[in-house]
Amino acid sequence: MRGYAMLKIGEVGWIEKDRPACGPMDAICKPLALAICTSDVHTVWEGAIGERHNMILGHEGCAEVVEVGSMVKDFKPGDRVLVPAITPDWNSLEAQGGYSMHSGGMLAGWKFSNFKDGVFAEYFHVNDADGNLALIPEGMNTVDACMLSDMVPTGFHGVELADVQFGDVVLVIGIGPVGLMAVAGTNMRGASRIIAVGTRPVCIEAAKKYGATDFISYKKGPIEEQVLELTGGKGVDRVVIAGGTVASFEPAVKSLKPGGKIGNVNYLGSGTYINIPRAEWGVGMGHKQINGGLMPGGRLRMEKLARLITSGKLDVAPLSTHVFEGWEHLPEALQLMKDKPAELIKPVVKISG
Image (tube, rainbow, N blue to C red):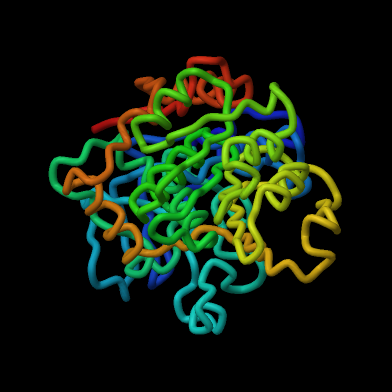
């Protein structure tokens, strides 16, 4: 089979590999549509998870099932399915402990284009199919279905990690596709004010639709100074970090009220350490909590988030600004995500359907 792969750090290309084998609890799928993630860029060009050779890229997409294992009960060949970016082993001790995304070790629920070949191939493997796949709801198009792989669940998980409450004033750092979903989730959670950090006009316009009330540009000075000015010196109740670098934690801590919480879902692709400002962290005693987490995967999560779209509660269409038809556009779409032109939010490649 053909796949688009990381050949080594800084180099990508098409390769041929054997079709993956299907275990008794697994499924083999063929893509209907694929989306490109900034994580793919971090993996290839920053070497964020280390060297990988001839590893097929991609962890966002929707698919058709072509084969299932003998123990799979709920899916069959021909089913059109949502595929989460994170596919835990649901019988693991970590899953039983409430952290399924770390089943088998830290971040080990993230298998696609990390520990095994990803979804940018003619066929790909899904472990624990009954626990990880979900049927695409009737009427949902494949482009929107791709957003349920990672963008929606990751952005919403940032909101969960920050523990946004009714009436909170929330700062969202980064309003790319994940940050936009963090804005949407924050708004659904009942925030009274959402301050968004971003500069690209297309993202700002989308963030307004999702509920952002105020905007800050990091190009106009320190983020925390602008936040304190907007809030009369009080700061914010919650922060969601959905973009930036290791340097994003310093303004987050400085912007946060005592007793506040920070939820980070940003993939830190480079840097060795994170600086936490001592004084603004209350010299270690400010009750400013920092939570960083990998999005939960799994069928139940996918089904619930899909219902937000089918019920009209969440519109993900603004995320997909660049939609291509055909395998040959995968390299172009990946390069777009690397370059991030001003008009881009998310590129999607439709394979069929």
